[in-house]
Image (tube, helix red, strand yellow):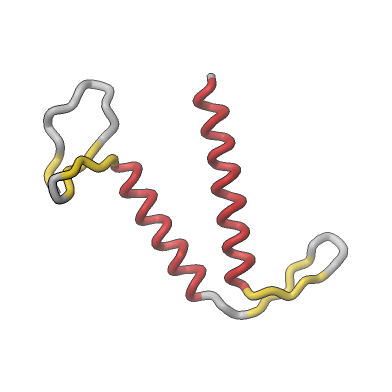
Length: 85
């Protein structure tokens, strides 16, 4: 992996991987997504979640997946609001 040397002053940071320029943000996202999927797949036991009044018993992987998806949606929402400023 060689650093891209022909960039403009405000271009995003990139790495050249197999002849393609990839943004460091993309590489970081792929690594974090792989770790999250591995973590979710490794935790398959059942847990009891209290939702204010009812107690619900679910597999832990479902709870982790829902939490991950809610985090992604909130992150995208916040990023969109910051980009509008």
